[in-house]
Length: 264
Ligand SMILES: [Zn+2]
Image 1: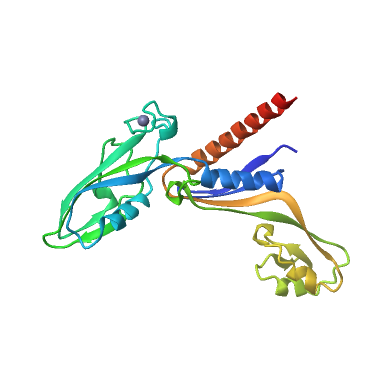
Image 2: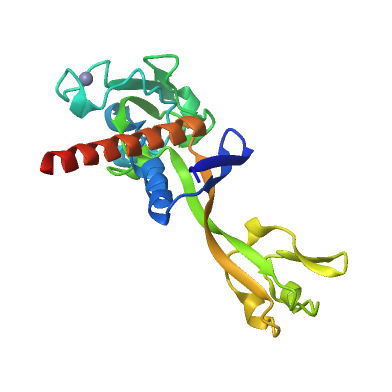
């Protein structure tokens, strides 16, 4: 069977899908590619002109690094591959400016970006509070990077999967219902005078049901399907993250093929 993705739930910040007919290695590569190889923009250095707040420059810079930025992968190059040779130019970096005075709570939405399309993904994240007479004036510069380099570049905050099992109840079942009691995740139900699997996706393969079944009428087996749960930071739409991750895997596989062919 060909590998397939079946989407179960989808919203702007969360997606649940089943990845079918793949090896554990491919499922894990997909997870890792989404987390560590799909690039996003993040603040990488900050020039402070005035900072009379209660916080040190470093603490503010660190907080700015954590703010997800709406990323357009078509607009920016990785600095290592840019025509500027990594020095920084409009093709590979973008500035966010701020000049505010207290009393005021500074939010992510207060920063002015060089490009109106590239802004902080969420505009109401509090960064710090300025009190009477305090001022903050800075320029934060963001660039593309990957989660492999630093977690701030990850496009996903959650990216996890579990194996979907296949549960079989044989004719040896004496309907004692012990498995319904034993299951901590409410996988089974009793309907039409027999035990049924209500929701196989909830099963965590803990095998408690198999342990209590005196008739040995239950089988819980691993399949080659995986239930993925992915949550976005807001930097990239989840479908873009998935497509980009698969593209990266494809390129890596092609590169591997090329190396193999060279050996022969
Ligand atoms: Zn550049």
